[in-house]
Figure 1: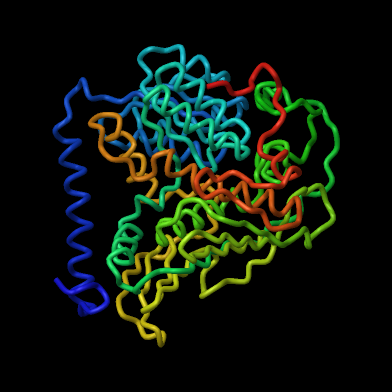
Figure 2: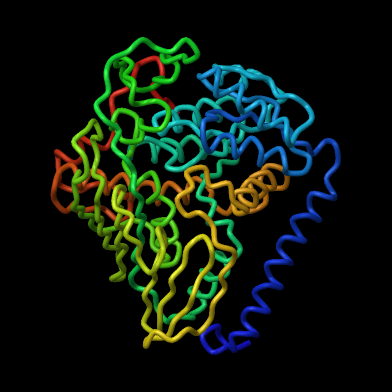
Length: 441
């Protein structure tokens, strides 16, 4: 067969479509053959945004039961119960404390869609309880947690998938295979971006904790601080105590695609520029940031995040451009276009346009990603985003934050991903914890 760069466009698209249909058919066949004993029972933790998507999504996977819904906000929990009832006849149990799910021997897996500060501690406790875990990106709050979560998976030998669902998108898998097959020659640089027009979060005030919220449990592993009225449920993203900045929030997805396309793992250096240019409020992080990652083999990833200026790049609010010695690729969640060196279209596969800025991202790729996780539990199927692979991407994001905070280029050991020769930066590798919840593998 001719390489993709030489294949006629119509033939390329025809073969790609057939491959996608074949994958979907094989997945349906695998589920159709499953018997009653193959049922996978899950609990979902954190329901205000992405967790609702997961509750509905896992209930749609054949022979999967969502047995528990968990949230520290009773209003959010009630709302998710109503959502789940639209796709699953059997009612799930509602709990505020996720440890009740871990105590149930019938629960096979925990799905975690909590704020970032809870993700690694909850994953480790679930693994210790013998559960498999689907954990949303960035899978943890700091660089040390990116190490701890992998150590825990390796110790307890359970399936752990990170929620970088674009790894399961048929068009993404198709174009990455084409890149690795030489469609644009040798890939050497990836530019990734995310642009939004987020509003101000204002100046918050200390306030009484709402009666429907268990704020003590919401804080969990984070050091204690009084409740403020502009943090929960979404604005925690922009406070270092709980969040990890846009580079870990949305950047994780595009940086992951970049790393996948270039075939790189750990960098030799990381630098970052940016700042808070929009609004004078409580937002603690950059709203504009550009991070440069240099890798062995003369390969580079550049990520640009603009949280409050929605100017698009290549007509897209988010996406990735990969440059190679014989051409380039522009891709996002809707599909991709392959160009030659002069910018002429070589091949293209674009699906229906989606909302690139939908924070819940209720998309087809998520369902396929969840299905892949379930098959990993049932039959040891190869995961599309195993945590040991996802943690390499997440580590890059945390390093971008550290480089931004210290204001200088970091030297990195490409064998370990650890910072070399910078005491101030190394002190930011991990965080302080509320002692009762400190993660311990």
